[in-house]
Amino acid sequence: MKRIIILISCVLGAWGHAQTTLPSIQRFTTTSRGLSVNSRKGTLIEKKISNVGRFKNLNIQKIVTKDVSDNSPETLLGIMYEYETFDEISKKTLTIDKNELEKLIQALQIMEQKENEKTNQEIKYKFVTMSNIEFGSVYREKLSSWLHYIKIPSNHFNQNVLDFNKDELKELIAILKKAEQEL
Image (cartoon, rainbow, N blue to C red; front, side, top):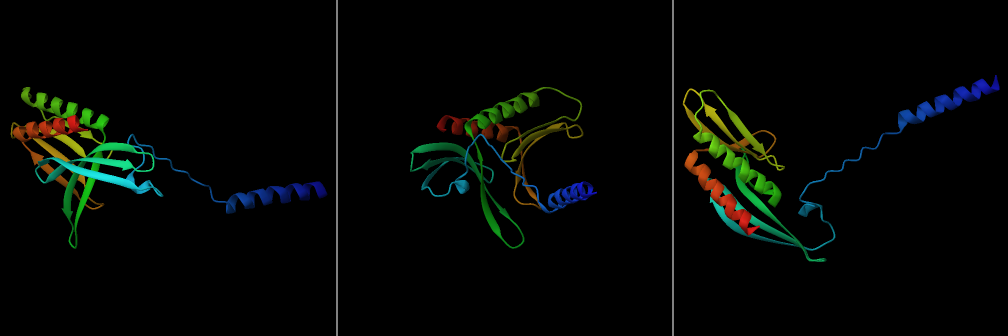
């Protein structure tokens, strides 16, 4: 009888402990860019920004951050834009690393090639970066034309969408190629 009572109390004790102990969730986010500037604590960071070009209301920038303690530089492409809500105007810069920039340029060149091909149905293309910037093209069958767009996340409630034509697509590709050479 004692053994049964001890066994039941051990089971109830373990069950009670399991109910009160919260599981620990560890979230590890890895990116190809390594640490962001905000996550580097206790070191002096030097940041240099140089403008590469301007596309619509986007400012395309070369961003070089350097950890002064070990002189390790990191070069990124920055896309800075302004957005406005009812009560504030903000600026935000989203980054793209060199490997992702190369893939983006290839995707935009494919979109440019597809625009020259004849089609009679609605087709959509999109490329989403790690910073959630969406580049895409849509063929509108009713209008018999292509619409190119960039969808930039601005906040939880809305997104900025920039649409542009074939000539502006060529201009965007040229700016991004220039930025790739500078990175």
